[in-house]
Each structure stands twice: as C-alpha cells, then as structure tokens.
Length: 421
Image (cartoon, rainbow, N blue to C red; front, side, top):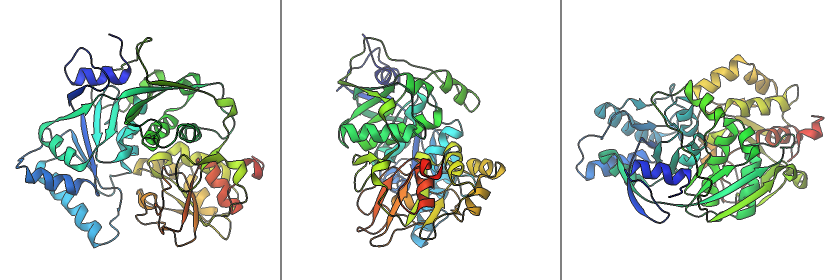
C-alpha cells in the first residue's frame, strides 16, 4: 500500500503496517512539549486523573518561554509550578531561564526533535518540527496530561496536501515569503486538518532555517502539520545535534494527496501579511505608504541566527527611524551568544534598536513590545489577529527579517532595495 511520509511515520508509531486518512490510531510518542502558559493546565489535569509519574522523564519537555523572565506575579506562579513539577518528576528536559529559549527554536537546536519522530506540544506551532521530517502537531493541555501519563495519544490520520515549489527564489525572498504566499493562496482554512507536504527544487535548495519557518506556519493555513521529506541538508543539520537515533521516511511516488498545488517561485516577491489574517497577503512593494510605530525581529518563526544576520545586513550602518522602535529577540541563548560573537548585536544597538533576552514576548501580546491603540507594527512573527500584539485597535503586519529591518529604517513598510541593497 502506497503511503505519504506522514502516513508512514504514524503507521510505525501505531505498530501497524499501514494507515489511511481518516483512520483513528493510538500512536506512541517520542516527545511531549508544554510551556509556561499551557503546562500548568496539563500538570493540574495530570494530578486530577491520579497519575503519579510521567511515562518517561526524558521525553517530557517543559519550557518556560512566553512570559519569561517572569513579567508579573501571575507569570511567576505559572513558572514556579513548572519548576516544582519538573523537580518532583526528575524531568531532564526542563529549561530554566538562562538555559531556555523560544521552544520551537530551542528543541531543534538541542537535537531533541528528530526525523521520524511523533511529537506533540501544547502549542499550535509545534508543527515546526516537520521541517526535519517528523510528524509534529499542537494539541490541548488535557491531551498533554494524558500523554504525560501514558506515552500515547490518539490521532485521526490526516489527509495530505502537496505543495510543489519550482524555479528560483528572487533576492530577499525566503521561507517566510513562500509560506505567506501559500497561505494567501489557499486561505487560513485551506489545509484544514491536513498534513502540508512541501517539496520541489526550491525546497531542496532551501536552508533548514527556512524550512523551519515554513512548517512553523502550517497551522496558519489550518494544517494539522507541515512536513518536508528529509534529505542531505536535514542529515547535516541533525547528525551533529541528535541525542538519540533517528529514521528518515519518504513518500511513495504513487502516494495519494487530497490536492496538489504548484508555484513558480520566480513570480514570488517579498510578501507581507496585512491585518488581521496571515492570509491577507500583498507584495511588500504595494504597501510602501503604510507608516509603522514598531518593528519586531524574532519569535519561533524568524528568531534564528540566519534571520538575525539577514536583518543585520540590511540595517548595518543605518539608524532606526526616529519615529519607530525596533525590538530584536534572539530565539535562544545559543543564538544570542553567536549573534554577539558575530557582531550582530552591536550592529542592532548601533542602529538604536533594543536587543532582548530570548522570549516569545510581544508575539502573543505578552510583554516586551505591546502596541497601544492605533499603533502599527511590522514583525517577523506568525500571527496578526485582532489584538494579537496589544490593543484591539492596533495592527500587525507580518514579513521576513529583511523587509522588517528596511521598514525600521524607512519608518514605513519598505524594501531593502530602497536602501540601495
């Protein structure tokens, strides 16, 4: 029986020879994730069901990253619960401030999510890890509670949609633009409960950080997961990081897909998602009349070292517009350290941007960059819903790091080309 990569991974973890879309299965889990917002609920439910210990103390990752360093008493209480539970359960994958990072950047960096895995997280952007050839998806906190006790979770096998990217990328176009263009094409529910499988020569040439960005935002098209068949680039990335064995799966040539969409990437320009949906996309060049108050470079979508390099290459030797504030957030401590070694942080500070410790912070309207009524931000984050970054009458535009940096200099949405780049 022919299967997609998603079906093969789920079949293996359900101890079955084959599975089909729509089939209900009980799958063994390789990793369970929760953060300082979602883990407290899961921990309380875990205790409610009378569970005494987690199924495997090396397969439950608790990462305080949304409101840390703790912004107020409520955040401190949430994080305290994570720390106490982790100590009591002797969890090896608890990441305190100083060791933590934005969860979906930290786990790949640390070699804790690997090809062939089945991973769940009480965070919708858990689909990020499909970039490494894993099946990963967001679930509710009560699902995490049950999974922490048993090591299993039930799934309905998703249908798969294939997205093929042809041609050659234009300058300043990367994974963020590809996924924004795709979401703009199919809509925020265009891949509802489907595994979004990305392929084509453009994907094969795309660096891992760009793949992580694309899979991260599969949920913004309604996807159950995003996934890319692993290749040499995947192998190079994971081999030097992996803490355990892993397995590459691939899709059969005659595997069935509910739909196939193809894109000529030579026609894709730097793309921006306008308020208040990730699907409300336009080429950045059509938005140059829109002034901004804030720029954010960071998040689990675009806070990796390569993203900081891209933004720094645009803003180097320039100043943030006096009417704009720019916030740069390296996604992990390792990224922060490497950005410091490379002089990237100095470039941002010389440009009069502020550099933050790793945190989700403003992405979810947590802190470190809340918008007031009437303010506009352009950000490398993944969502721009009403009130996402602050006041319900504020606006968020989503872009790649280069467009964000250029906009910081220009004081309006703009392109690196306008700066002579």
